[in-house]
Length: 239
Image (cartoon, rainbow, N blue to C red; front, side, top):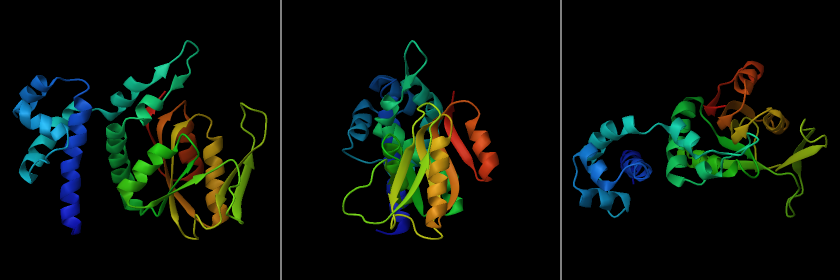
């Protein structure tokens, strides 16, 4: 399959993800009124039985895009408890939503030439994998323990302010190469301590952080990190 054919298929698949996401909010009858397509056709698209033609893909993209607000889709899935803490798993668990978010991230950072996506195990992994797939690059995730089968590691220790204990992150020595351009991705950022440790891991490996993306950020940490590292730092939802 040529590059142009692959891009065409991906544009068609994007319509499927849009329709599946909208199906949570609208009935087939309502989607039929929005798109002008029969319910039977929409049902086949949503179920993945057929893909729209190239012409219909362009048409549906212009019709459906205004109905999908990715920030709102993520916000609506956050579950808050009485103390103000939130559960992000309903957002991370939506493959259609994460695919569309990853598409946006890939478009935002494609120009910097990302070679690797880096995250911290474990909650950041689902989003990182989606982003890595969209960018066509490998994903590296730092763990809090050394795995057997690997002898050499890069490691960084830091003290999370909320815990008062030392945390160490490890990545295999081979995972990042010198001169790799790295996009750091995570689901939530609060203090930025873990993300600073990931930056230090990049530096120890001789790699270069070229950007950061977070699904949800709390407070002003995004602008703080952008000022510190002079790289683009983005979040979809700011609390």
